[in-house]
Image (cartoon, rainbow, N blue to C red; front, top):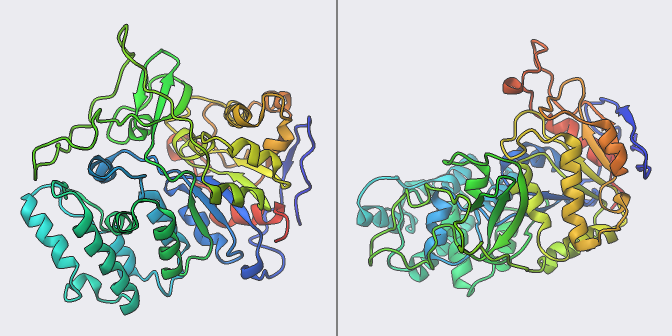
Length: 441
């Protein structure tokens, strides 16, 4: 049964029904347009579940990653991060195309150690149809992917460091370089090639990075430093999250001698509080991608989903025009709160997270924009979910946001609700809930 629209100024604590799936069969080709502000891998299972009921979900993805092999790629090529785009394209792909062999190929990584020339020879070998890595992949798909790899090898800087490189990212980068910059053409082509059952769009198509000013005055530059991938992560609540053109490695992409990479540990240290007179990374004010804004305006439901709160969800709200587009969209807006530990939230309650979402949206939509136009419902699972900072029902009521208690988290067999063993979201249950709330296509 569809969930009624939320009521401004009221906070309810309803327990939604727990049916295993939609009550009636759906025509997936004409399923609802559910728009997600998303980033990493938290929505992989949900993406799979949604494709059984709608092929019209839209995934607005953050292209700001700055860690691991992505950091190496972005040092040499000034481009948005493509790893999360690659993962979402494969998650939504037709299984008949995205065979285990294709997924393994796109996830293939070169060794972290070894001679530069040896690793480059491996890439050149992969560009040949004789390489065994192509076995089990549709010949047409394989031909197109090898073409993209050849483009990468042709257009990439000669000093590119291949250590730890992800092949799928290089394929997307090849298309980006071949078309003179811009992710739109290559993402569109890969969507058709993989028969993606949904739409994947970067929130901006620009070479940008995330920066966070913390409550203790320190500044972290680079998404990986905020989320704690290979670094300590945040040590105080986030005061301000913003976009910048300043690169985490402090360079312009030309570090290192010809044929020599800058080293895998160049990203290890994080910025602390800037010394007196030091310049704060300059904030970049950039517009949301036109395609992303268009999809927001046509949404049947807008979802701020579970995932790394700042780097995967709130980061999507930073470009100019996002808040206005959300406010103008005539559809329900829903936040599915994280269950368990998210290092980025650092003790924030569910109400605190909702307040942060509203504040980010209002910076663009206007400080007096009613909450109901931006975020109507927050979804939690009181019985099975774990919320380290608490839920804070009174805080949600003060914000004018509804609380919906629904069985969206998998129950633990022993009934424990310890943060360290918190159950994960049930992808089918979340999909069913969102499909029931969405307006028809």
